[in-house]
Amino acid sequence: MATPNTWLIIGASRGIGLEFVRHNVSLGHRVIATARGSSSALDTIRQNAPDRVKVLTCDVSSSDGINEFIEQFVRSGEKKIDYAVINAGILEYPNRSLEMSFDHFAKHLHTNTVGPIIVAQKLLQLRDVAIGTVAFMSSDSGSTGNFLGFEDGFAAYSASKAALNQALRHMAEELKRKKSKTIILALHPGEVATDMGKIDISWDIDGGQIAAEDSVNGMVQVIQSKTIEHTGTFWTWENKNYPW
Image 1 (cartoon, rainbow, N blue to C red):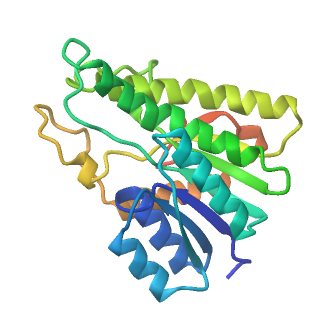
Image 2: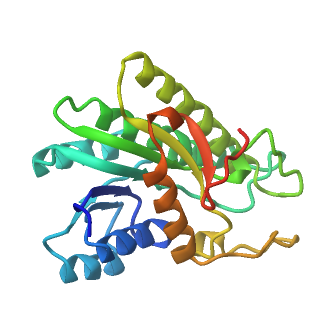
């Protein structure tokens, strides 16, 4: 196999994030995984590959949680991240614009937009840490060019992902102006069968749900295929360019 890479997975306790850990460990790569609290599934992977898996704590919904993670990361002595996947996020359904509370809306924004961007910002500010690619977990729900009007009850979630998309595009441009070689990407993982996706909706999902294994296998290939010329772009798990 090729030289092992180091992957950082933010939000790895279950679902897509946990599958990113499993997938990359199975290929012999090193993984730094984060979770808000304990995760038996993540602990099992670490126990089976203690030399290649490191688990840190990160709560992206609070400034203190992010700062504590950065302190842990600095103490870990890591100096290079080949690929960072900012996967942490929530979907509390329904979140209709005519019904949601201030706090419900704010929770989606803090967890899905503000937290992921600030985590990436803090990592990029570490002068002695080289970062190759930062891939943010977005969603087709966050696309304004391909608005999904049939998605009833997704107002807060969609708005938080649209805001994430715009913030990461600005991040990519700001890095380009600094002559940085770090690549910034947005990813749509597909309609994945995870705990977060277990909601009662009244419409059929186009193509049905896919397994986390298939989604992650596709996204890993997408992430690894992109160069600095692709920074600030939006891709599906099938390597199709997606409209903002």
